Amino acid sequence: MKLVIQVPCLNEAPRIAGVLAGLPRSIPGIDAVELLVIDDGSSDGTAEAAVGAGVDHLVRFSQNRGLSVAFQAGLREALRAGADIIVNTDADDQYDASCIPDLIAPILAGEADIVVGDRRPHLNPEFSWVKRKLQRIGTRVVELAGARGAMDATSGFRAYTREAALDLIVVNRYTYTIESTIQAGLGPLRIIWVPVRTNPKTRDSRLMRSTFGYVRRNTLTILRVFATYRPLRFFGAIGVVLALGALAAFSPFLRAWLIEGRTGGNLQSIILGAILSISAVLMFAIGVLGDLIGVTREISHRALVEVREMRANGHGG
Image (cartoon, rainbow, N blue to C red; front, side):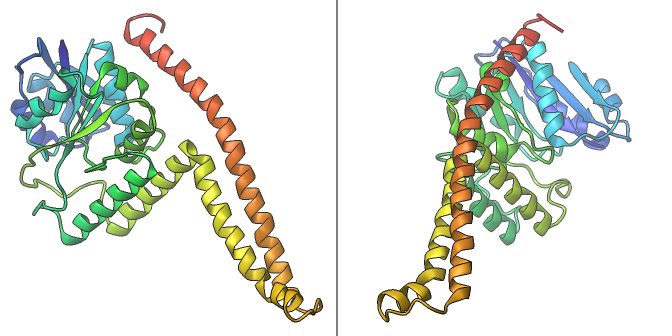
């Protein structure tokens, strides 16, 4: 049983050696623990510092490609290295590395395919009041989108089985956390949350540069993932709202016709109602088409997983 701990990083030369030194090299139930650093186009010598700290595997990008791309590149490299379990942690030393045995315990027990570290953001004094509220609201929205039982949807402290890593597909380049959480919740993978501890903050988040930008990006991610994986429900809900709007728009004309017996006038009501009615029908049609396209997407997904598995096992290019 091999565990690979991956650390995506960008310009973390002053911290990376300390982060790697704090990661466990021996865990009960694990035969080998190896460390992997993904250098996402650093310009401060992060890769050299990681090599000097004794990292086992290094993936290095010539330019910055984004956290999501670095995360997925790490999964591919860990699979090639023969990982049975992959743990992802951050290079800013946010997560307490001593919690890694707790993180992988449900996988070793056969109870989960993905385990997410729950920082309990609503209780974390390191988070501002605004960030705690946003984390709580965001997690509830992610749960509504399909990730049942979600506790801390934006946590990057995660453990994956080999099968779960092969199955994971993330399109968003900004971050992988929300999309992969919803995807796992809607699929056959078993995902659970376990409480973990965090370390004092060493630097400001590079993802949350502004509250508005963070909320905007994650809101768009949730909407896109929900529309992709639940198109009938997503567009159907919009269709229902438009249909109710059409009914409200038609109400002056219907009242005049059914109660007062007048069929003239209310031209604006009729036009607006007709526009909303047509829009509602279009939304329902898009939802049905999206649901049918989902069958093709699932077939493509399975083919991609097969290709990944062959490459990870040393077959193919």
